[in-house]
Length: 502
Ligand code: HEM
Image (cartoon, rainbow, N blue to C red; front, side, top):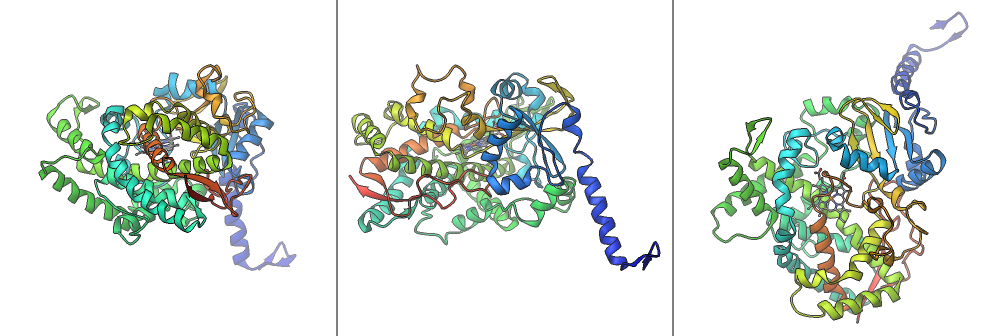
């Protein structure tokens, strides 16, 4: 084709040029929004901040943004405007004081009728209904009764550790701890005992690993990221962010286990059983309602939430355990201190909630690990109505990201934040604002599994350190380099250590 009588350009090139131009206009059409609201931030370019994540990782990107623009920054995920908040007073305002205006999380990925029922994805009244029914299953009294289930998974872990200690080989902690946390979550959330380390072909193990392997590089994810309206289209097509086969596996198996449990007079103290109890109560009690209409907690609610507990609770906990083991191995004098304390209060015999409660140094060590390496780098909320945040007019629907990692590494909030110092959590040294520490989020929509995770990690540490010590090995990376392309915080090359008998 002769364009303007100057050069011959094939029609298909013109067409591509036209489509690209349209895409660029579409993507950049939102890019003035946060600037118009007076929120400082980097120029969005075409793809927004996404390139920075690839170069530096999300945590470092946030630290750099805060340094350059302050604790309230306007960024873009391609065309989606995001208010990044690293100011703890504003975080408290959003997540606690003005919670009704920010109840929901932004869910970017397609959900179906199963995963819409989960407490992590539910919105507004549905979330309140689900969260209020589930909360009692995670109370300290209920978690205390799950210690024997966790201990039984520990026996498998100890058997596997014994082999490693005997051969003296180094091994990757995150994978190793994942086997344990997967066994625990299958036991408490699905009512099933597995040994994922020695039985990798067990269908629960295979499907759990597929289910949690959510790739942010899959075409569905990329399309939702570039064009958020695609989420609705995918949902109409019945697609979901979870692997369909794995989801079907859990739906079928858990339905079976629920039926068996209802008929079995012996009740296990697991979360699945507690959810079955909730279902029965909700059927009988008219006060379970949404918008004044009686609502029942169904089998599908139970299944959806069991899957959510797997996704939310398995890697977060194994990551933290692997960071803890790294910090113990690289700080042997602090490991001695932890061992001394547990020898004194929990040296032998059954592990109980009472002796776990006395392990204050272990508590501080876990907290400091979660401060330095919070598995969730950010969490998010959605603005439900036009509002004002720190004097900026923010429209309804805007996504807010709470910069957990950046807050945990902010020198204004933490003295010498890059130094690992568990004693900074001593009651008389804990800074004036406890909201600076939010590895489990903050406010009514914080992590429902926090007590379970902490108990699970303490039981694991007591059991391991009664007999063994973590030591560095030739492949231990010092200092630790964090992975850049992961949504969750993890070590770039894994955490390689050895375990020695004491
Ligand atoms: C070290 C381990 C864990 C960490 C660091 C962690 C961290 C978090 C964070 C940061 C959030 C978002 C909170 C917010 O938006 O304010 C969250 C939510 C959640 N977590 Fe955890 N988590 C852990 C373990 C667990 C476990 C073991 C379970 C379940 C068995 C679990 C289940 C959930 C659920 C269901 C939510 C969504 C709650 C809601 O929307 O109401 N987490 N977690």
